[in-house]
Length: 207
Image (cartoon, rainbow, N blue to C red; front, side, top):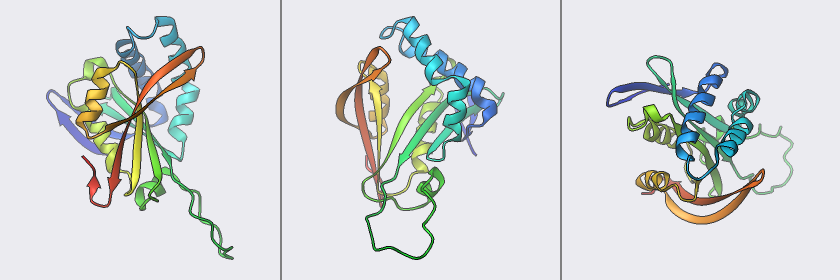
């Protein structure tokens, strides 16, 4: 658990827990309706929020062993923001059979504690901050906290919806660089995504 503060707001960043689910869903709804007010019709926003932030979906997301789901919680116990990181650690190269027991599958914990293979990746699948809590350093704190938990030799990628210039500037400010564009079908909608990447080497994060 990390204590953090900026401006008028004090908050901690910690692993998401089941009791945080209503607060995460509420923060997501506020952030989505602000962020996508122009680019997505209200019905589409509501449908996607029901899909990606239902209690069942969030319960499964928090419980994933190959991911890190963290929340920024204010001194009053309110969920001010959240971020999810999903690991994709490449399997080792094939070797001759070993009579010793096979190692346990890689999880977020083991991935964060070891040096990853050069082609290991991690995707920042979501990072949102409630509108009322923006401008307090919460988004930057969530991003830096997550990056600090990743192993060496890992490539981090994230997708930003096309036209979201504010988000693109935010990630570029933190050392991410544009990589490519793609289209992702979700239901009846095709999302135009701009992908950004950042690599961590043995000397730290490339800027």
